[in-house]
Image (tube, rainbow, N blue to C red; front, side):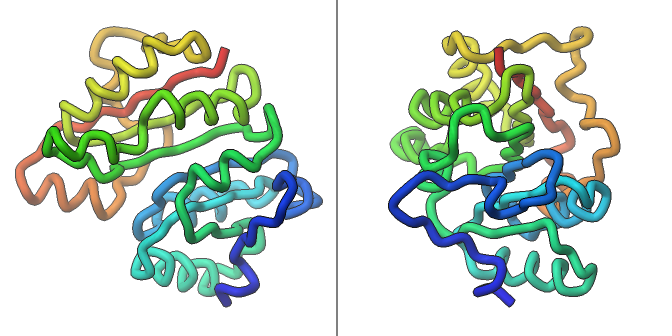
Amino acid sequence: MLPELEIKLGEGPLEPTALFPEADGFVLEIGYGGGEHLARQARERPRTGFIGCEVFSGGIAKLVQQIDAAGLRNVRLYTDDALKLISRLPDASIDEAFLLYPDPWPKTRHHKRRFVSPTTLGELARVLKPGANFNFATDIEDYASWTLAHVLRSADFTFAPAHPGAWHEPYPGWEPTRYEEKARREGRLTSFYLSFARR
């Protein structure tokens, strides 16, 4: 099934409306892992087009299996570096973006490999519609702090939690991913659920 689902970039921009002509909105998930969150969202929101980015074949295979089992027709997959795809999306074309439990690259010398950076935030800001959310979840406090610091330096996003500690409350309708369940088994009991709104 992958050839039918896979996004191949051409020379020009990637128009989400070309991927999903009948969709009423478009969602991007970066590094979807086993695909549980993306597949559930696609089932619950059949009129929305979902673009998933993942480079690891195991995760891609798991999501393809879920797409097949559920007969999902509103998901397309990109199997290379997500930034390559994001840079081809038109301005203000995406309604929501997710980055859930990304690799934290915990060693200081590897921090440059973290997905969140001024470059990626700039591109996300460009493609998100005004008011759209960039949702970031992690169980690693250092990565949560890193992301918050980068976003607060950006003029393109706002961070306005409903109350102190709201960042520990899962998103509405949230179901744990397998990475979150693994974190709990390994004793990491606290997660951060950050939402940043595009100005």
